[in-house]
Amino acid sequence: MEKFRLKNGQEVTIRFAEAKDYEAYCVFYEKLAEETVFTNQYVGRPRRSKEAFEAQLHDENIYRLIVTDKDEQIVGVCTVVVERPEHPWLNKSCDFGIMLLKAYTGQGLGKYLMKKMEDWARSQKMHRIGAQVRTKNIAAMALYLKCGFEVEGIARDAAYINGEWHNQYYISKILD
Ligand SMILES: CC(C)(COP(=O)(O)OP(=O)(O)OC[C@H]1O[C@@H](n2cnc3c(N)ncnc32)[C@H](O)[C@@H]1OP(=O)(O)O)[C@@H](O)C(=O)NCCC(=O)NCCS
Image 1: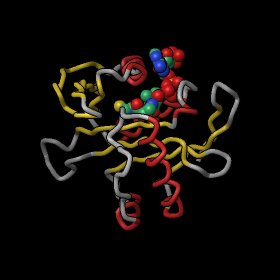
Image 2 (image 1 turned 180 degrees about the vertical axis):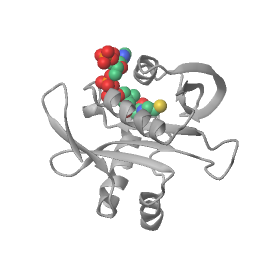
Image 3 (image 1 turned 30 degrees about the vertical axis):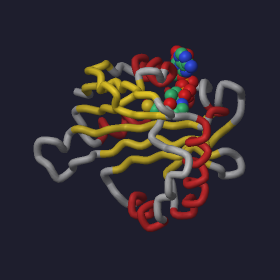
């Protein structure tokens, strides 16, 4: 567990999720879905089961940090996943995701969490870390490019949101 001071002076806590965080975790994703269409959370998405949530807490191929405010409400989540740990060709590649509630963006938190995720990936001897990002997500792309990620290509019409097709960048960073 560690404390992080936002640019506006507010202090938040960064830590691993625990079983007791299940309700706050669900509420976080519900709030996020209302605030942005830049992640894959959508309004009305069924909640993940408590069992599935708890199972992920003990999965060594998932690195997940939550950010909480003074009331233990979750205001941010970042995750790195090794999708194919059993596969000898694919097990050095991982994917990440990061999401903050709007009130906590632009405060330096994203940059800090990116470093934490990259440090974990390096500690696991990962070779590649990647993600897909909506091409209209200016803030996310600014962050990822600043962190040394490169655009590999574009997935055309990868998401259909509110009557409109959206392209997504494939981005990655080679860690060696
Ligand atoms: C994308 C996101 C993770 C960025 O995190 P953040 O905490 O807002 O970013 P930071 O404050 O750490 O800023 C990091 C850098 O990105 C740049 N940046 C951030 N927001 C920006 C914006 N709206 N426009 C341009 N650049 C921006 C800043 O210049 C900053 O660089 P600096 O440190 O040199 O000043 C966050 O905004 C978020 O969670 N958004 C909603 C969900 C989402 O889009 N997730 C990503 C899905 S791929």
